[in-house]
Image (cartoon, rainbow over all chains, first blue to last red):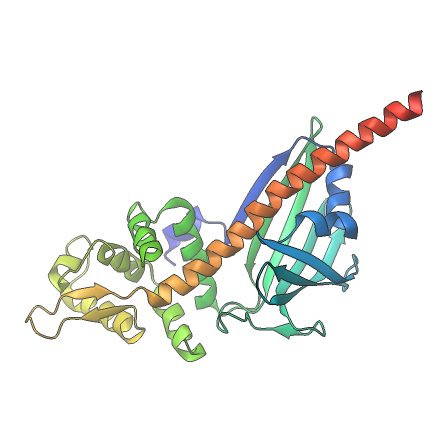
Length: 172
Length: 118
């Protein structure tokens, strides 16, 4: 990463997604902190989340099976690191095995083992902003740089030209 | 792809000039001098970057022509890009469902309050 590149992307923040909800903070916090609620909305498209553990406290696990239609299920887990109710949650997300141990991604053994996530909730005029930041945890510097570079390119187009790279990638 | 090769891919991609070279090659094959043109770099400097990219399996170079045009090899990039996109899709999809969930929760809360007032 060159110095100029670092200025445009906050250091080590490599993935960000924000959303504003027309709901009070307390309600949004409950959607993150209560098992029945979290299970209903969180997860990849086309799969049902079935939690075996939901321990919403620092050091606790959210261990879940992702059941895809017509496919085998895949295990995943969160390890909650820090919880500041009702504003902030940080956790490590990774693939997992049936016993809640950490596992490499089944489809690709070389992607970052764990992703560190931080979500911040803030309320203004009855609306709540949910801001998620994520970055590879414990990754080598060059892994982080790639993750950062790739994400920036997917998000903004890499000086216009990586859009074409993106097209090439999706075509093949 | 093996982990050591993925490591080489990561290392090769960590340089902005090399990523820009790949972006240029996404438009089509190019020779070393064509690749050097937009950069404030000498041909030997570009050649050095190309060697790193070639070793990482991100580009291949023609054998026949003397100019040895460079071509993008997309497999390693595709794998990485697909995963990051999946992570983004996961969150976009989840945030959509959170919206639906919160609307439902609010409507049942409102109904509950009306019930209390009766």
